[in-house]
Image 1 (cartoon, rainbow, N blue to C red):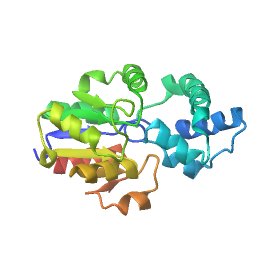
Image 2 (image 1 turned 90 degrees about the vertical axis):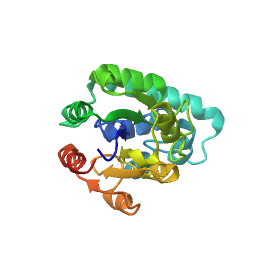
Image 3 (image 1 turned 60 degrees about the horizontal axis):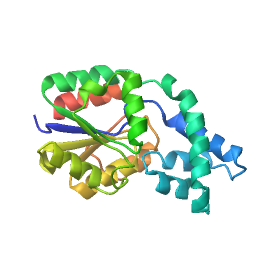
Image 4 (image 1 turned 180 degrees about the vertical axis):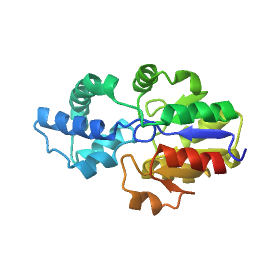
Length: 216
């Protein structure tokens, strides 16, 4: 086993939530009469912590207005959250990796409350040994999430692999000295992911499952 610790991003990597997140960001802006970001700009912020996401998605938004945007976004997202599906094959892949002996963990831009709700909705909580969220740790692309997970789980960068769908995931991995694999079915274009030279850039969960079986 080359990488005993596998760290997964959540949104856009394991669960097909990127279109919903984009739609809810845009809806929140419409609710408040703000400039509505296009799909590319709204998609880019997926995986970032709240302040960084809002600063990019809505340039010039006063910090005093963050709370109103967040409240509107959460209202829209909570209405859709229970129906957001895992990518086909994700649950079987994770179960197989755990059965093989890998330790699985999560590094996500979600809040702790959001990740707790998502794990309950999907029933995946028992598969993961640990997790880090953007409201309890420095946001991606800072290395803190990975560094804290490695420390908690008693391993190091050589034994760790990051799997994600955004440049933020790949940059975080690089900053932590961790190898990374990208999936291109999520929030960021394949060309942007490939430019950061991950070990592989895979089209879907089936390709990821095969790659991990052969290389992890």
